[in-house]
Image (cartoon, rainbow, N blue to C red):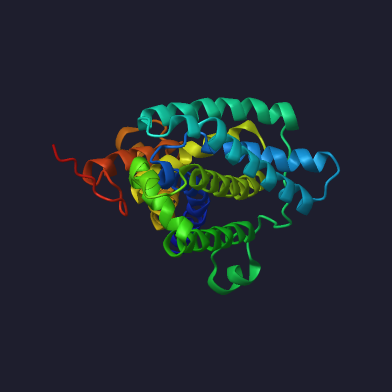
Length: 304
């Protein structure tokens, strides 16, 4: 039982890392009603900006601030040169635009900052907390705990931003109907610029944490795929849903990787390793059949 709890806890903490990437998708979807396929590329670009600026002699704190400014510029440029031209266009048009943005960022990042694999040292060692290990016998990584704390603080701030501020309410109005929001005097261009800037900041935090764990490399773009099952479970418009979805996916994939292969091998023989890679997608697919809008998503009914 102790081993079960240790695996589950490890999965929950990893799930919060997935939630951080999913937050970027939620922010863009809430403001524009489109799935931002470029979020993974933004995570990679932000991490590259940090290590690239550090290679030029900047200290860590200055490189992070510089990368934040770079991501703000990316968000403003996206709104100015891409989204502003596509107001009131079908969602599929905006989706295709984000695919183009993905390839643009994936090419621009290495061109500006180099493409060799480099580490990011946040000063947090990925090792068990011995005091917890000695008291309850369960290993909790210092890095996982630090990353989880970052995610919780960021989610709380974003939830307050959307619920309590005028800009947050304007964001929700824009997501519901672009034309109606414009007729009410809501500056659509400014709102989109703000939300892309915030999404860029979220991508920077995700890039720092994932880059610290796995190194800054092109594989960071694949973190977007890890966020898909999280979004399906939590709902594409819910910030709390991104957290709950991440916790469910993180815990279930770790438990599945440990407990399903022995059962399958006893029943059918052969090798059933690697379940962690595909189990979240199968789980999300089955969940879609039961609740397509997600746990916290709004049920959408079209009347004709």
